Structures are given as structure tokens and as C-alpha cells.
Image (cartoon, rainbow, N blue to C red; front, top):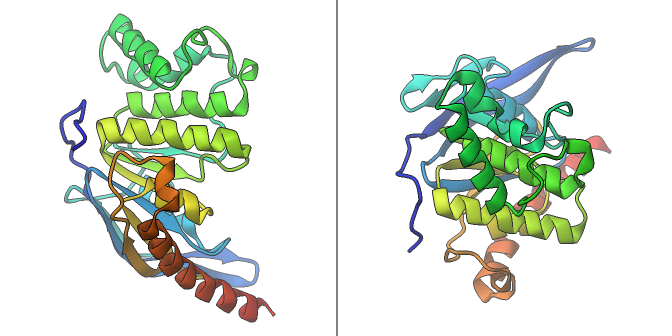
Length: 270
């Protein structure tokens, strides 16, 4: 049984029959259609689907950067109508401020909102940097860090903000294999210590199953949930689990669903 460092927070998010269309020169393009799912508190939900199916659009809708064309998104009983500090996105590209030190980047959110004293926030920020393996790098600037180190700093910054819902939009994409595995380990340890509500979008099925408690397999565009798969591997997760019989079974089930959607996308584009 994993012991949490923080008490369980609220963070039940419901996507209810959501559709999203964008206006283009050729007319309206439907990207998300009648999509429904729930993100449960203290659960790491992972989303996979064909490239370009609308996963990032769903992240933007949940974050409040976009409004649904129809349907609604509800967080702890309240409709999401705009961006808010209760939802935080870690994007594919780094979002660290280049003119700030790593420490100031991590502490920026709570300090800008007046959440605690400066000394207290900086103390917690330094502690998180230690946890993600950035001891000694607090006074460096982002351009002095490797890509993987920047990702770790962003993880620390996201956690220090203590959002009700953490949204991860392919945050490890573009990293080399070794750095990506290291980031998966850091992210898992931080999640397993603190829990919370997490939605992690990835194009890598192996990564999805290693990290997640529940897998959402999405259809091609306009996207909706094709299948929900429970990932009943024990926690804490270790890489040796990737060779287990249960992992193989879940992988094959998910791959069959993904392959079906990929084949439909190819035939449609052809």
C-alpha cells in the first residue's frame, strides 16, 4: 500500500457528451464528437489514440483554453467555463521562463498568487527540485539545463502548484530513450507519493501501460472513447513488470483496439 504525503484532494472531473468543432475555410471541422469519460481522484488515467485524433483538443477543453461546441465538462460539481489554477497542463514543449532561475520558475505560481510566504514557498520548491534529481541546479537558467532536466523542473513546478487535476500532454515526447525512462520513473514516484487526479496523453502504448491505472483508447477523428481498459498492475511500478504475463495481456488488448482505429484512419485517408 502506497502512503501519500498529502491528504486526498478533490478532483473528480467529468467529460459529458462533449463535441468540439472548429471553423475552417472549408467549413466546420468536427474534432471531438459525443465524448464522455470520468477522471477519478487519486488515479492516473492515460489516453492513447491515432495521431491527430483530437487528444490535445480534449486537453485544451479540460484546461479551459477552449469551450465545447456542445456538452459540458464538470470538476467537483462545477462546470468548467475558463482556465483556472485548479487545472494545470504540462505541454510537449518547455514552458519555463528563460529569464528566471530554475528555483524562481518552480516557485512562480504560488508566489504570484500569494500562496504562502516567499521563504516557505522557496523551501518547498528546493525540496521538490531535490526529489526530481536537480539538487545543485536551483540557481541555473533553463538554457543551462538539458531537455530532460527542463522536464524535471517543469514537473516540480506543476506539483508545487497543487492543482486538482494535472494534465500531461505528451510531456516526454522527443526525449531520448534513456532520458524518457528516467522521466517516467520520476513522474511515477511523484504520483505514487502524492496521488491526485492525473490525465497523461501519450502516443507510446508501453509508456501508457507502465504509468497508468486506467487507459482510454480513443477513436480516430472526430474522437470519442472507443474502450476503457483497467491496468491492474500493482504499485509501486517497476520496469520488470513490462515483462510480466499480465502486462502482455493488457498490451495486446489495447493494441488490437488501436490497430483497428489506425486501419480505419488509413483507409479513410486513402
